[in-house]
Image 1: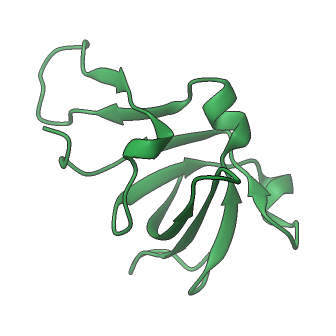
Image 2 (image 1 turned 180 degrees about the vertical axis):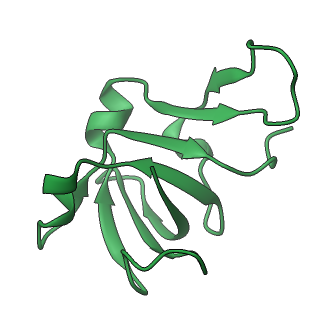
Amino acid sequence: GLNAIIVEIDHENQLIYVSDTEHEDVFGERAAIDCSKAIERDSVFYVDYDSDTTDNLRFIEFEDLMVGDMIILGIYESELKRTDSILVEDIQLSTQRLD
């Protein structure tokens, strides 16, 4: 997956706009990510990294994402070459905000 920070959310069109983290150089200052496929597949999820159990995966709603969230995006290489919005396979919230 690729790390990013959410800079804007368009709930109506199921888009998020992301920028690179300090360790990535993929999205630049602002890139549109189409989340419709991930939402359809219930592939927006949160992992409790502090948990020692394997029961630490839980699904969250797209509406629960917030500007400033650090996320990990599952994107196929072919999607990165598109000039319009990138269709994302899955989104993982990578912060502990939901605890």
